[in-house]
Image (cartoon, rainbow, N blue to C red; front, side):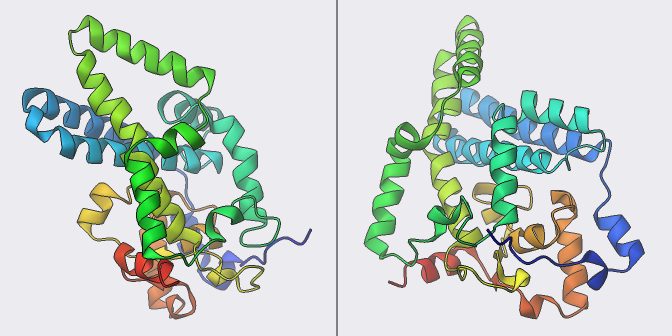
Length: 282
């Protein structure tokens, strides 16, 4: 097996710049996790008080469920906290209990990104597809079929959701747990996860040798960040180039790369609709 080509941070950043963008924090990761849960909690409260907002809550909460997965992903790289034990504790208990299963699989993806040995290559290889094919996938996502078929439910999944349902039931709000936790998980989360996978690696050259084009960065406006791409997940090319940078520093790294004229060599798209247009060009 031949690993994917790598870049050296010193070729792109001064020592001071690199020290700044790659610095782990004792509080920022915790703050971002708290922000994610606060958004979920607020959306649920609004949905309980004004049930008419539940469809919007489904999208907001599903997107933040993706956010928890993204933060778990950062923890898989030991970026969520400067202390490795604290990093793993926060991710396992407050983001996703799949952390220890996900970490070796994901690091394999990074080692062989877009090479024949990449375990995630199956997600991007079918593209481009037709618009009809994409819409079929969207329907499967939004009707829960993708969740039932693909999502691995561990024992912890059933324990956590059982306890959540029990707690909400004791409060007389069992329906809120079903409609504003399980329903987003079964519908909007699979859809935005699919869009994330398409944006990150679809139509990226297989077995390419340029490490600046092993993944895609997609610019996201506030609406896309709110409903599709939370916590800077759209800066995926930068993440693959420099896996030591925490997610909250990826925008800063991107701006530095712009100033140095590097982004012209990277794979970048203007928006998520632009990526979908490429992905449905078959």
